[in-house]
Length: 375
Image (cartoon, rainbow, N blue to C red):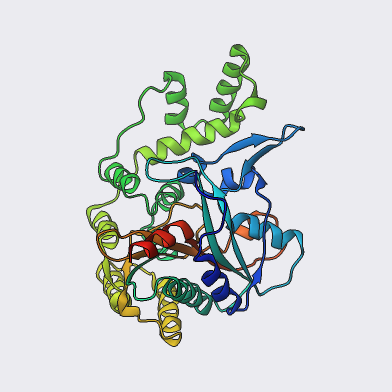
């Protein structure tokens, strides 16, 4: 079990955060489970330590800081812009290569309306803080962009259900590959009851709903414990539509070409422009946002040529909406030391009355400490 004492690198990290106009905040270790179950993604959901209150409310041990910090901001009715810093322990079910308790520190930038500048500042702050902790170390920085991927998917003209599937799979290479295979070789839905299949074939939605309702009543299947007949019918129609959808060869090539892009960030804009022109995709607005971020990074004296843009790169949290990035130590060990991104929808989903743009990053203190010991 890891020590409950902060690693030695925490002092340098907190000093760096203090110099960056942040407010140090803390959040309770015990958190309502629902926001994490709804918004963090399958990879983290599987690792959450669940518990229950005396009244039966689902609770969990804090598995990350972004959602608790955002909830704290909303509860306090705090004004924006505001930059929160944090440093403390998070709790996750252990994988083979990790502990179940470890320290994270980070900054959450809430309400900065200059999105490009805030994105650039998050990357620069994470990078420079690591440099302060590990002087002389070299780092590799990988950047992706959920918004660019979403723009490409929309421009391909796929049905809404397929767009949602692809966007949810962003960053999951195995899942994306399976979805592309399904788009290349659609398979009809099998195993449908013949009466259900007939209603679907005839487009008789009212008849399908009535049939599902009667079947549920006959089997004693409570609608309170599941979806309503109308919702089940809608899902069946959507499943049938998705099963027969296919991308033409050029559109499929476009999606695969995009996902294969991997270049230095200094060349990424021109590569994206050439890609959109080749396949006739209207993604100019998303590229414009992308270019403004690069300009902001240059203005912050960040070496953009040292950053790798990977079009298929995402991070395993569902709440990201734009920029995603990770910073690792270079060399044989290559430990992942920092990661973050933009999450513009999260605060609204958590109950904020107004739209609050947001971006942040986390540092893994235990990994930083080990990297320092090995220098």
